Length: 129
Image 1 (cartoon, rainbow, N blue to C red):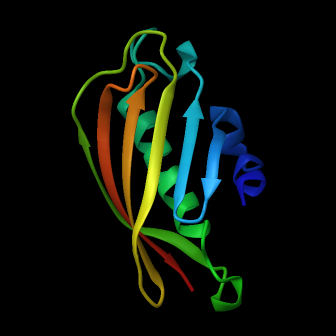
Image 2: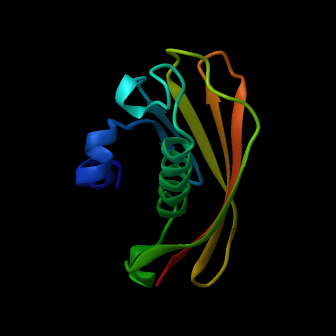
């Protein structure tokens, strides 16, 4: 699944790297690039949101029984931005699956900079049918 995600045009352009892909526990890194910033130094909130959405989806897929279906989408997502990124720092995001229901998977996501400073927290509901 990480290779499939990395091959999508938008995620390939972002440059998202999967650092850890374990059942219900996924970590990604987004290397710093000025094209992803507000002002040449701090990640744009939309970029942080895209990373949170993507790592949550990867966590949903990470322990999925493919016999149960492969049509998928984010159903809902909420993000709390708590700090701006450190200038020039890569973005790290970790997602853990909180619960798996019949078709819905609930994930909890934390985005931080390289020093471990939390930048945003997200919760996501993902559907695979």
